[in-house]
Image 1: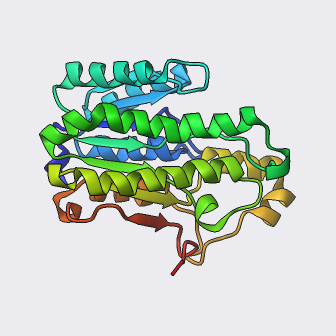
Image 2: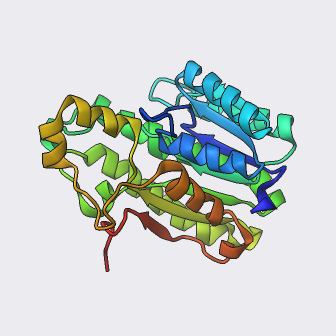
Image 3: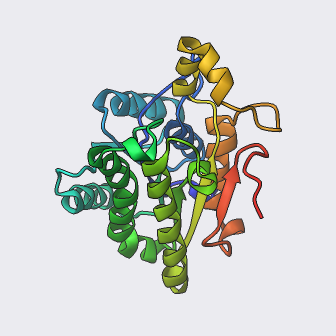
Length: 266
C-alpha cells in the first residue's frame, strides 16, 4: 500500500515493546511497524524515553523511514494543551505535513471496582485517554484538513460491554467514541475520516501476566472464537494501515472491533 510512502503519521504510545520471541509486543509499536513498512515517516510519543529511542533506532534501521520521538505525558498536573501543541508543531516543522493521527496511548488502574475507585485513578484514565485524544485531534485538525487525512482512535470492549473493574478506563474509552462520532460529523466536509478501533491483541503485558499469574490469566482472559489473540502488527497494525487508505475514505464515525469474534454486538 504505497499510498503511505513519504506521508506522516503521529502515533501516541508508540514506544518499542517486544514479546519473548522478539516480535512486536504492544499495539502502538505494532502500528508503528506496520506504517514504517509502508514507508510512512513517524512521530511517536510516550512517557518512556528509552522505549521511544529503541523504536526510533529499530524502525529507521530496518525500514529506512524517518522517526521523530517526543516524550509527552498528558496528566492532571500538566499544561496538556501546550504539551500536545508542541508535539504537533514539531511534527509539522520536521515533516511539513500530517496525514494520519492515531490516538493509542492510555493509562488506567484496572481491576478496581467502581465503589473503590479514587479520583486520582479516575483522572489517570480520563487525562491519558480522553483528554489526550481531544487535544491531539484539536491540534492536528488544521494539518489534517490540508492533507484530507485520517484519524484512528482507540476504544475498548471494556466500554462496549461494561467489564468489571474498568469503570474509569471504560468511561474514557466511551468518551473517545463519542468524540470520534462528533468529529466524523463535523470534519467530513474537510475530507477527514475518523474511526474507532476496539482491539484484542497479544501483548508483552499479557504475556508477562500469564507467566506470573497463570491461574488468574486462565480465569480472566478469554480466548476469542478465532482461537488466537490478535497479532499487534499483522492484525491490528495492518488494519490501521487499511483504515488510512483511499479504499476506506468513505467510512467515518464507525467502531471496528478487532477481537477475533468476541466483539459481537447488535
